[in-house]
Image (cartoon, rainbow, N blue to C red; front, side, top):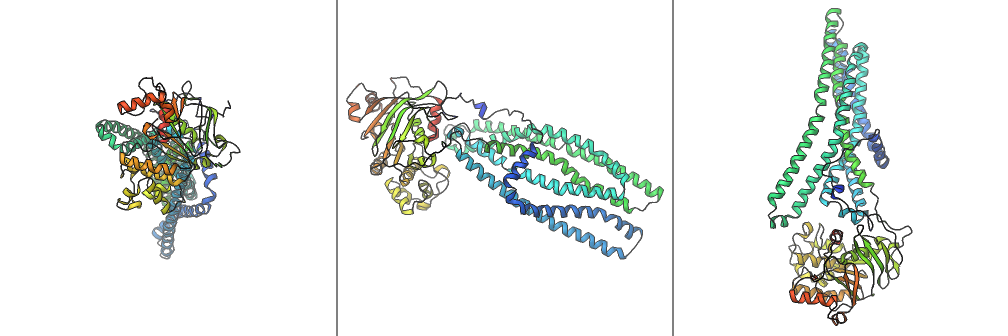
Length: 639
């Protein structure tokens, strides 16, 4: 027996606890010193070159805004002294011109930096959305089995803005607020060095307040992101399953559940508001002390010492104007904490390594006949729960091979392994003598057409969904495939024919219609290997007969593997494999297997014939693992 390398996430592994996947109580995430810098450096390394000229424009505009703000404070001294104190009429023209020019420059510069930063931010969001999706498509199906799709989508949508916010906050804080504050401090020192030093005494308590508040926000920000993502995901899942919700009268129960989650999210967001907004009154009180002290001392000097008021007015103007950038810089750390949480969660996702990649030196699949051979294949999802055990059989090239067995026998897992959704624990799977573990997954799956028992349709039109089977297919190819799948007639009866939108997961079509579109998608693929997981189970008798007849033509010359629940669909199969608890117990044709009345296949046939039920063996114990159920969900079937 040759053993294939066990991939992480498949075969031997410990059972996964739900609490490991979606923690109900988020744990405290400690922010390491310098983590903001590290994340920013990574973002700039990945995107800086792309936006360098946009950043140059934005920074230049922000510097102009900072310069004109400082100029406004400085010009107050000559305005008060020369116009109101010295009563010089000639100074009115240049002082007014200076004011007007500074406001015009600031207006245009503010517009330029806002547009430049918005364009950078929007493009960043789009880039990371595409990058995340590309990365998700590289992850194995095990990741998606363990992750709620609605919650994942909600979390990604909430987190992706963190990349944009980190850059925007950093750029505006450093280039605009920090430079503006430095400029205003320069004006204050120029006008009155003594008062400037006394006004800076508010700095230490303000810094202490910022450090205290941000330390409190680090934990609750992450909790808020996770809670909100769970809430959005729960709402999405409830709307997607609205038919089941109404059929089982779950409206009130779900309303209570989602209402409780909404209240938890509200409480967490209120807590964030209470903590983050504490900085407002602290900074206002400190600024009030500074301004009133300066006004009192300046008034004393003006009244007692008789000093001109211009320098004092300029100093007070600069002090008041410095309050806003100082407050924004203080609040920047609060905003950075939330943006950092979001950005870090995005990178946690992007840094997930695909657990089942192509082997080093993997080659492209080159199939000629399509013979499929399982050689002593064993597989399990978790320790001590084997799903397939030492399984060997051959699906002959160009022939139809049927896989039958009771629920939990491993039929759908077999199909998942053939498509390399998972890698085998032991043994090999070969197609035309080529070990599929040494082939690229893209080329392997490109040679396989798959129809699941539960067809899935994507957003778009009927034509789009059929064309997913082969993007290069022409309209005539699509229509021919639809005819072979007995779908052309009902498609042409739709309001817009082949260009009719299918709605969410084909909501505008019946189950049988969705199945026929799915079959057409497999037909148009023109692959040498065809996998059918009870592909006609959702059809009525007339449609099933038409599709079965069409499939006979489609299967001609193709290696076809059929998972069968209704034995009537496989009586004409060239070869029938009977599985029981992951082992091959019988194989042969329908006639040879029925010749032995004590065979497992014959027993299944009698049960189905007598009870009119699906293929369930109620004379033997059935062992169905939760992991096999997960595999069925993965490939859309029902073993």
